[in-house]
Length: 121
Image (cartoon, rainbow, N blue to C red; front, side, top):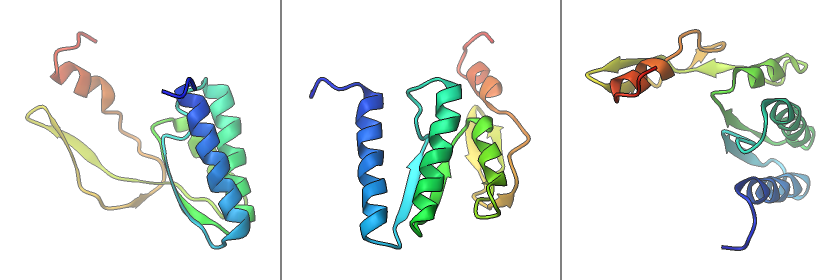
């Protein structure tokens, strides 16, 4: 409605969150599929900078993603760690156990899920 792209709206909001981290520590941040509106190269660089910037001001939080390239940010001095939930498809429905496990998920479910709704992949 304001004539901004989804990506522009997202980075404007992220800038607000980063500004709050500098004035109101400790800030709790929850970012879901950060920078989803851009290419994978820019997303990886941007997400790493955002997370590092927030942490540098004492913020703590979670970033959720399906982009495995973002899991590489973990190697950033031990302040960042990857965790995942296990899932399985049961009668065409995705279910999760909601138990956080260390590391990056090793099982893919998207193709199986697409097939379950009739997408021929």
